[in-house]
View (cartoon, rainbow, N blue to C red):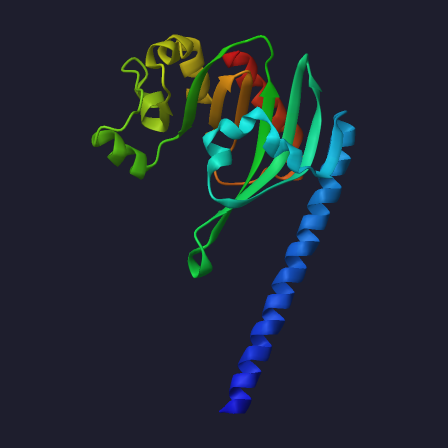
Length: 217
């Protein structure tokens, strides 16, 4: 019995080391690819820059969730005339066997001298629909049922949000891939729900995010 236990533990250790090695290799390859892409699109690159978590963007819901928050693969530079940041972000919720780590690729734009209407937009899940039925805020537009069925939209100033989300903005979000967007003061933050963007898709994602930014701001 003792020998069997030893074999099982040894096997588990070997499996752990294989998974760890594969993860480290994938992260190194991603880091090298992101650095190359940053140079191709004319942005500066930092492999690890936790100062992003000291900026005003930390007011947003995305950056208040969980623990062990980490920023990596930061690209920064001007897109048109706006200061832009693009980076990988992860955080962990729960603990022990129930711990779960979420990873996103985030685009953040600083829009100076512009008081943006504060809002949070994300694809609507079954959980959100139940919450809406129970009275939690979800700003819907009867004139655009496709948008209302697809997205959860909320914020403090509902009147200002409705003014911002005019027909053109609503049609834009109906037609583009699902996105999570938060805005307040002079920042807009955009990411695709639940996943990082592949390195080869970074340039396209940055262009998509910039289009969101200019549509709203």
